Amino acid sequence: MTGIDDAKRPASRSPAGLLTRPLRPYAEIFRVPGAWRFSAAAVIGRMPMSMFGLGTVLLISANTGKYGVAGAVSAVGSFGYALTSPRIARLMDSRGQRRVLLPLLTVFAVATAMLIVAVELHLPTWAFFVPGAIAGATMPSLGTLVRARWSVLLAGSTRLHAAFSFESVADELCFVIGPAAVTLLATEVFPASGVAVAALLCVLGTLWFAAQRGTEPVVVPRDRPAAGQAGQSARPARVRGAAAPGLVVLAPVYLLLGAMFVSIDLSTVAFAQHFGHKPLAGFILGTYALGSATGGLWYGSRQWRAAVEKRFALTLTLTVLGVATFWAQPNLVTLTCGIYLCGLTIAPTLIAGFSLLEAQARPGRRTEAMSWLSSGIAVGIAIGASVVGFLIDAHGPRLGYVFAALCGAASAATCLVGLRRLRPVEVPA
Image (cartoon, rainbow, N blue to C red; front, top):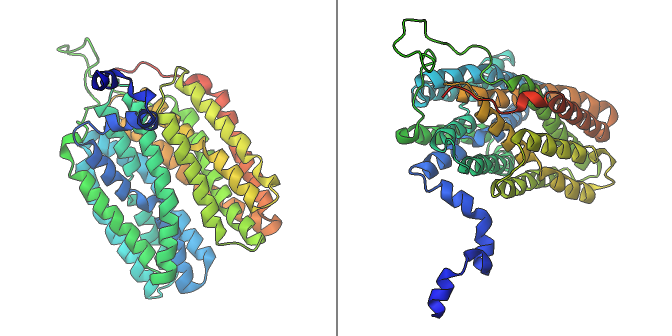
């Protein structure tokens, strides 16, 4: 009888059940056939998103001693990514992921090799910009593609929330490991090794991801006749306008978030240097990403009753309120504690943003819609880095934190003003 009673007892009442219950939604999504393969491949393939820009700066600055040129080449790559990412995503929606990924990956690998050769041969600095721009413009955006696969596999299921949460946590994992790894490689092994390893991870992860044909979304023609018009001679209905109505609000929100994120990064490095502990900057920023990953895991393990646009506005506002305290932190210890607590709401904000677009995306344009968010962050990072660097040089890291808070406040205000546009809308199947 004891064994039967134990079997009937809810797992949540036992210590083991209490520990595993928050992770149960994540275990369920990976029961989908092939899910763990394309998700793991995407984690490997998107490591360069946190390594390539920093690796480029370390490579060029080590060979030329010019941080200005190094930062400019990295910024050109970010702008290239922002400009091409939505267009490449549109091609993938209309022609399939694998068909576009393989030639794109080839161009990226060749451009990266050309960049390394140009720097190592000490060619004129203008020769760095062309391969740098091409490499940035053709870097595969696997974070968007993996979310598109989850959207198809778990369409209409509450488990999609957990899948998006896991991918946001995976993004944060990349930002915890990537910067430290590329810095170690570039400074302790060889200046070019950081960029080279980042490119290698991208190639291996993308090839593995593209090989998962069974979970690749089926291409949906955009000129499919509207419901109820099949067999009629009328011209097929075409979906016009933005890939999702909410992009008019979310794109500027994410651009301002990108500027806020990079301002926090650069200000933290300068703040740590001000106290004579510059190497601790990486640890502090890693704590930021760890807080985000913690918040993402908790957020994804729960089912929420509140509307997703309200959750997005709330977590974004909480994030901005936390960032607004950074400028007043008296030392690195209080900054580290504050930055961890503030990080708890980062991943939930990003998760809610992707969920909003997934619900609003027009037929056959899901990948394109999500790619606009990544592009917005990339543009914000490029713009924010160019502005906050001058502020820090002239007035110190505290003003850099003030600039970050202003960017965050503008982002939250944009969200609140356009909140009605973020409500999920009915789209044709």
